[in-house]
Image (cartoon, rainbow, N blue to C red; front, side, top):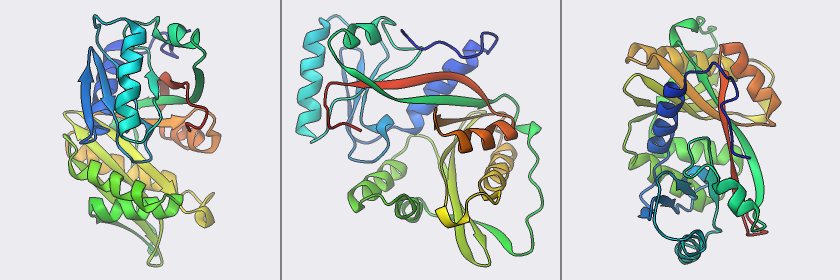
Length: 263
């Protein structure tokens, strides 16, 4: 079954704009087109930057497109992943590759805040500071918090440095020690929150929500009216934080692969 907008009354035009903005924000240097498919094959952690996005109708038979895509990903040393969204063309693609035995994994929710003005940024406590950091240091910082290998951190930094839309990265410090970090991508009046991460030892204290509120405030000062983010569907703690900030589910997506080792 193809993904559907999770809220029947959700603005489909805004959802489509958010999908475009998310594609732009996750664009790696390593990508090419193949008969209506956008192939991305970055060595980084983000699956959005190492998968197929079927965004336009093509002319080649599906099996040929899959075979040609597998060759591209094999040359890059990566498994072939196909990302399925409500905008996937054709919308029967999910069922077609499922019928070929491709497994489904990583159900993800795209959440949207319709009006950034609805979120106010509370005053930071005296022992808390928010500081901007460079994109390469940010990639290293968040990668270290996640336990990502050096190759993924380097690929992340490369993708951010070459992104077609501007990213702005920040770190939240308590008593001078970094406890959370995150960044946002701006495109017209849309802001996307990315890589929001709180150190395991500092979780459950409201740092993530505080960081997000201030990122949204900064983005709003720069013209952002709508906000979006992407979070795994089973990440209940993070989703609860975003719901409290006013985000609501807009649509979902997932991946398909025939590689048993893909994750």
